[in-house]
Each structure stands twice: as structure tokens, then as C-alpha cells.
Amino acid sequence: MKRYEWISSSPEETKDFAEKLGQRLEAGDVLTLEGDLGAGKTTFTKGLGLGLGVKRTINSPTFTIIKEYMGRVPFYHMDVYRLEDSEEDLGFDEYFEGEGVTVVEWAHFIENYLPEERLDLSIHYLDETRRKITLDAQSSHFEEICEAIMK
Image (cartoon, rainbow, N blue to C red):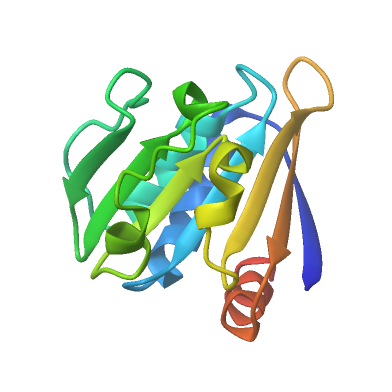
């Protein structure tokens, strides 16, 4: 595992960074996304969607758990916060091993279902405008992607 860190000074920078990441993702890629409430997880996910060619408005799937979008590959956005203390399997493997890219917010609630090869991200407040984005690459594939976007 290799760790990368990036500092964002605004929501626009966060979105742009995520868009660069999204442009390099491919079918079968799984990303986890943790962070403080209001730190920018949805903003980050919107940028990922742009990088994947999604045209629809992306918003948090808090009440539906999983939202699906079409881009150059399908994009699956999961918010599994409501699954805390649940052993319910919603067919995660079908998404994780499917033809799309999956981002999972609050992924620690379904840790037992996550694939080993993934990109773990966290977003945390530094101050009123700045956020620290940490990327933990769990495979050489994601290390290559991180190296490319950090340039």
C-alpha cells in the first residue's frame, strides 16, 4: 500500500482533482470514500462523475443507498451509512466485479464485502476552506493512477 496526500483550497479544486482521477478510472475499479460530515465527499464524487463522462446531476444517495449513472462506463455511487450494524448484503459483488466504477461512502460499514484491490480515500477539514485528501492505493494499478494525477 502506498499513501498519497493532496491539499485542496476550495470545492472547485476538490472537484477538479477528482475529475482528473475519474478520467483514469476503468471498469471494475472500486474507491472508498470516508471523511468528516460536510468535508466534500459529494463534491468529490461529482468530480469523479465528470471524469467518467456522467452528464446527469450527481447527488448523495443517502435514502436509496445506491445510485447508478451512465458515463463512458457505468458509475455506481453508494452511501452505506444506513447499513451500520447491518449484515445485509445488497449484492455488492455485482457492482464491485461489474462493468462500472464504484465509489462507496462510509465504506467502513461494509468492510467485509470490499475487494482487496481498491483506492481508499479520506477527506478531512484543515480549516474553513482547505481540505486534506488522503489516497491509499491498495494495488499497483491504483499506485500508477495516483502517480499520474499527483504530477
